[in-house]
Image (cartoon, rainbow, N blue to C red; front, side, top):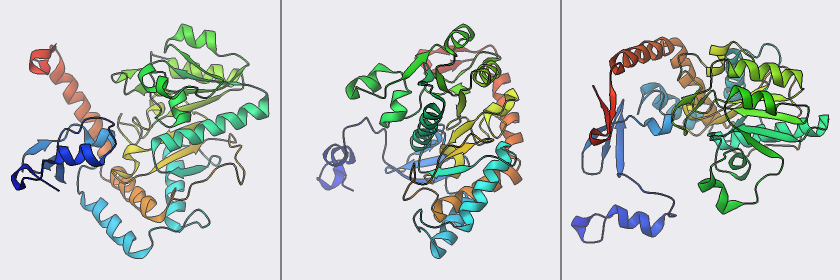
Length: 335
């Protein structure tokens, strides 16, 4: 790393020279502990970003550190030609937490975008098997930046430089009227986020998910829930769809599932799994290091009472925010 002091420039200069120009970098972070991070100048920050909804246990949590160290000493990578105990344990754990019952399967990927790409393939396989064509997503949604997931993310600034995108993808407003009008026998799958994160943390209308489940079932379409941001306890339940008392056909996961280690997953429910050998896979997906960390993180959340703490802290913040108004001058709420 170069600094202004040694006359060789700054870290910003290094970033501009060596990294793709894909957005600003706010600071050069060098260390984290708990809820705080430190930059190269020794300034401490309270980390409200959490790695964009990733660091579910904070920074350098002992459970995370121990899981990485122990598994790295044992077996880190074996490719998709083999299974490992860590992979099997995590798949069974996710099925139990999601309530898939005896049915359902898990595919491990490396990110939320990859999990959603897998879900898109599932939707396409269902379309081919049923003669349906259209995949629906909601205006305001964010499902990723790879070409398939980007096709489900109707934001012109993201999509326009890369057109043409996937065919047979349509977007509807997140309203009950739009939902009722859109779901018919031509729809192969509907993708939804229970709470739209990038749109500004916007919940779906009351009853939307339940009605989406009724309509997709009636018309033979898949209901695929994107829980990349809302999953792993962020709403006080393991997965946000559980608040609505529904069962989707598939859900995508990532971010908090391994609290900072790259890991994603697609979980299917019931018999809605049309994959067969050769239709999909991943060299790194489900490697023993990632899945060992995922097991340790989810066990800590489950055994440590974190879900109850999420609900309690959410209620506390709700009470504190009552009567507040947004103040741009203060870059936050004025209470």
